[in-house]
Length: 437
Image 1: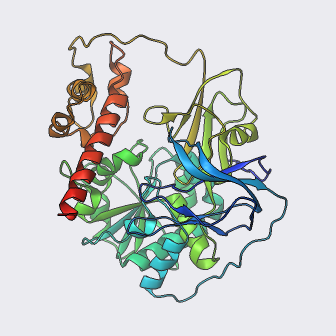
Image 2: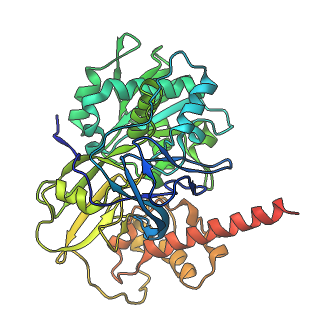
Image 3: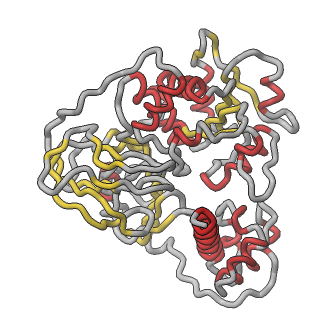
């Protein structure tokens, strides 16, 4: 089993953002100079799309203000000076809870999916759902939890119970032999897990029709399905294609992560809120690997736990070198949706100058979503976001393949991501205007 580092060293300073999901920001419940305990609720908010924030550390509130964040923005945060104290608020486990109570516990724990949606909302999308899919295609992240696989599986079962979804499918990469071996040795409902390959038209539904297991594991290709690739995950694993502009729940599927399954177990069986995650660190560091780290810990401390930088760093990227965000300071903290950190040397950082599009169409040929990346990027550059929407910019999975093959080195991914943000803002403004009529 892969070695996993648990980062127990106290940081000099902890930055805990009041918004760590795609939704409403919390208002701080503490004041400067106040002492806080492990598990204490630091932020609370009202509305339908919220995720409470808790303290993973004991310590003193040093300040409250705008601080660096891995999103690239400055976010309202509670800054703590942590102490050696390990005192926590009382953690109360729950037994024999009803489904509605389970959802409430998951909500109170502030659990967030790897694609930034609060888990309690992801499990109850107010649509008919028949399958809960656990995305375990991030090998290093999955390996970090194999030592507590029984808790992950119990958490996954609790998610099924809470949501009322009848069956679960765990997706691993076909070349991830370590995870497949671990799942083969696991037991659910008193029976060994069924491990099945995805071959041709034999998707997960094909196997679920022949067996009465509540949960199965499928090995699907060699793709790591990032947050922007959930529609592709639905098509590849379940054989259910998601129409442009729609999401997996429209074909009766909900997706969760390995980390949230473990967090659900912690919340219900141990009474703990969501306080820590596994984060992978790769690239120009001395000991690449996975680290279990508490939220709010500066990224530089995580890199130090992996032996520090190998040489002078050129760029630090959060959540993937293809579609992630390059941070401007390694003082930014690990947050709930942080999955990986990539360090590039100065020599690895591309310094090419962008030139005009030569209309070679290489980006069109390689796009897995059959989009027109160069056309969308050009409209985004001109501020014509409605045209971007008409060209299905929102269906871009941000894999970065178009930018890699572009001989003109255009910033295709960045422009398309910006157009998606603007389209989202336009839709939100229209919804607000409609609601206030």
